[in-house]
Image (cartoon, rainbow, N blue to C red; front, side, top):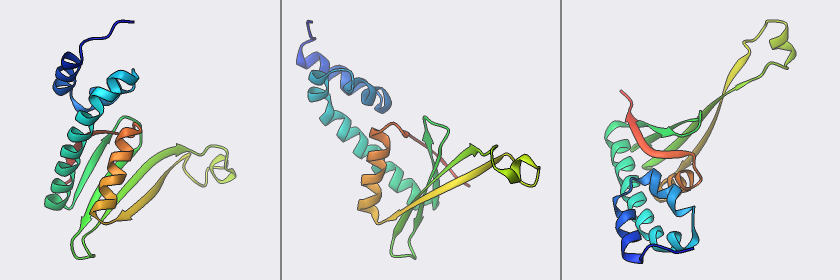
Length: 141
């Protein structure tokens, strides 16, 4: 298999958006070696923006590729802590209470991760690199 010159691959990676770049580095070990530093830099820049927006708006919704919903909250009065909250709707149709009509057939489950800024940066990076986040967000009003 013939590869593009390193300079050309580097140029292509520089022009890719974050999500496409993340997918691209997974396709080939050579491209990963060339483009991962670019991905890492772009991801750090995006995480900087997510942290900034969270501090300005108290809470933002982190867009996900999956049906999971992620929120990022900032609490300056609570030792500058951040929370990533994840919600997912799971059908629970086999519970007896659901089958007899005492509870609705779907429920919302939540998980939270609480940390300082450094820990939240690491968590956001891991969620993105593992395909849970697409790197974009919406302000919550």
